[in-house]
Structure formats: structure tokens, C-alpha cells
Amino acid sequence: MQLRQLEHLVALADHGSFGRAALAVHLSQPALSRSIDTLEDSLQARLVDRAYGTVRFTQAGELVLARARELTADAQQIRRDVLQLEELAIGRLAVGLGPFAAGTLGRAALSLMAQRYPQLTMQVEVAHANSLCERLYNRQLDLFVADTRDLKKQPGLKIARLPNQPVSFFVRPKHPLSQLKQVTLAQAMQYPMAGPHLPAEVAIQFHRQFPRADRAVFNVACDDEGTLQHLALTADAVILAPHAAALKANTDTLVQLRIVGFTDMQTHYSLVTLVGRTPSAAARAYIGVLAELLGPAR
Image (cartoon, rainbow, N blue to C red; front, side, top):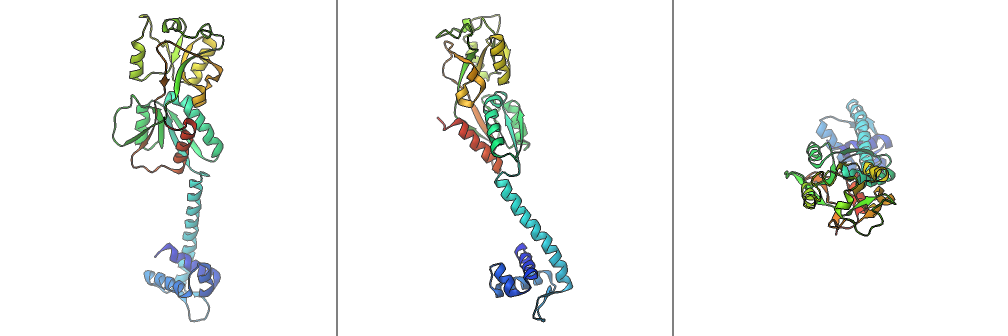
């Protein structure tokens, strides 16, 4: 028994004759008759009496017809639901973001997704890469974006590097250091310095240039980009952040500070998915938004 055969039975009931039903389902009359015969053979029951010149259903035929209407209606609804899912009129997306990526790239991507797909259910989780990896393995996330330099090597992950974006130090407008063409790290450390928790290899680079032994370079560690900006504007802090033009971050209200020895710094974000897992339409749309925001790989 096949769904198509049940659809033919419903068409026969709705149109009242084999000829009209065959036209409706785009078959020849003999082909439709064979389909009904095959359905009867599979059920080992006569469904339609053909001796009267008109279509009359047997008792078994009435029973099967009632269920066939339910099943074909469900099948049509499934088709509609899948179409809506592919068009993102329904569905869900669970995205993980590294803490610093959440305030820059994640914020911009979420805004575009919400604008374009207002009916889509979206869940965003912010954590460090290793925690996000565990949730991805458990299929609690569709994908995540984070700095993967400290991610422990694990099987089954597809890690796609995203295009690098520039990272710099920033201060508030009219900060005492903002008028200098170049600033030494020692000069910058006369003020609070704030930045995200750094990957190990980046932390080593800063450690090599420590001018002071009484404190770390960053005496304020915070992974929230909005909080870092607030510190820059209210506490004269020197903050480390991606460029506004790159990720539509909030650094457009700040002034870039050039610190000697720390040029050409870049993000190191990666898109992480599970190997062998087919991405949903929502996940594909999110990946497309990331590509749109970040531009072509360099």
C-alpha cells in the first residue's frame, strides 16, 4: 500500500468516476484502475463495486477511504510544513557564540536573522569554545562561532576558519593618549587596560612585552564587548576590540590607539559544525549571514 494509491482512492470518491478521477490526477483511466486494483490486492479486500456503472464503495472501501483522507491530508500538511521550514517561515535555530564573538559578530548576525526571518525561533548561547563543543556534540546547538585556538582537539568536528578581522586598542574621544601618533605599552598601562580573556598564544605575546611586574597588561578581563566600551567611555580604560567597520561593533564611538609592538592583530573566529550532520535551512541561512558580514576570505 502506497500513499499515492490512497490519493487515487480519494480522487475517485471526490470525482465520482474513473474517467474524471484519472484526469484530476493526470493518469490514464486504465492506469488509475490498475492503481486501485493494486491497492485492493495489497489489502486483500474489495474497496469499489464497479457493477453499477457508477462508483460505489464497499464497507471496507468506506473504512479505507476515511483513513485515506486523514493520511493524505497529513501528507499534504507535511509537504506544507517542510516548504515553510525551507523558506524559514517556521523552524528553530540554536547557535553558540564565544563570549567576545557574541558582542560583535554574533550581535550583527542575530539582528539580520531577526529582520529577515521574523517567525524563526532562535536560541543563542554564550560560552567558551570547549563548553560550546560539548553542547554541539549533544546536538543542543546547530553550530557555534568562537575563537578556536584553545579548542581541544576532538573527532567529528568540522572547523571552518572565518575571514580575519582587524583588532586594535581603543580609547574614548579626547582621552589623554588619543592625540599621540604612537603609544608605548608602558604609557597605556598608566590607565586601566581591559580586554577579553585571551587565547594562550596571544597571552604569551603580551607577556613577552610586559613593562611592569606589579600587574598584568590587562588588569580588567571581560568578555562582554558592551562592558568594555562602557569602561572606555567612563573609566578612561584602554580596551582591546575588533574594528567597528569589520563587525559592526560599538567601537565607532571610540578612537583607535596605536600601541608600539601590537599592530596587525586579528580575530581568529571559526565556524564549528558536526561532521556528517546536514545543516537545516536556518543553519544555512545563518552561515550565509556570516559570510555577508565578514566578506570573502583573505
